[in-house]
Length: 292
Image (cartoon, helix red, strand yellow):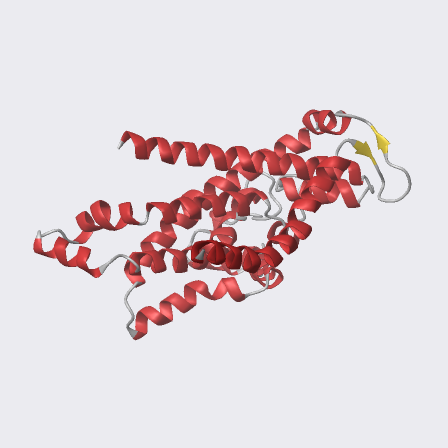
């Protein structure tokens, strides 16, 4: 009886949150997937067109360019943000004054507006007054000066440092919490056995926070696939679609031509691609875990 009352209490407590979440997340996703099969301008009658929107997406070279750029963003996030955040968490998990200051400095971009971050990095990359080209001049490396955001060959790679810088603080906090939750008895046992330093990190600490790393990878992939604001502020997807992402492709295709059915098909495609990438990453990590 007490167990039933406890379950009823839990369900009653969760029900309002589930209703709100379903209303603002699941319903819009289903609604968007539904309108992906229609030619609809946002007003008036929606004309059913079957899979024509999806066929148009697959035949559009801009879509494939955006997908390629998004894969670059995903790889930069997974192999840039996570290892960097993990290294910083190991170095800064203690609580002296210097480490608290450094943790705050690393986390600072998370509390800044994306507009501010985009403007800061635009000034850094500015070809005439930017600090990056100024430092290259000062170091006698003037031949390395480039049009960082205007050159289609390097523009997408110029967006990776602000991307990593913006979100590494989030994963730093996540990994620090995971490291601090490792029981002290395990550290004491490792000390008695003479395990310390890098060996302790690789054989004890990292295996014990493996699930946290998996969650961080999922957050990285999903966050990278819906990246929009930073790119839109800095380049708007240009030059010549060189920095186009799936989210900016959806925005430009939807609101510039009022093709809401086509935009819904793109958003559904982004969700499917995100699920495939997340599923693949989980399969790979679980496969390694089973092999071990």
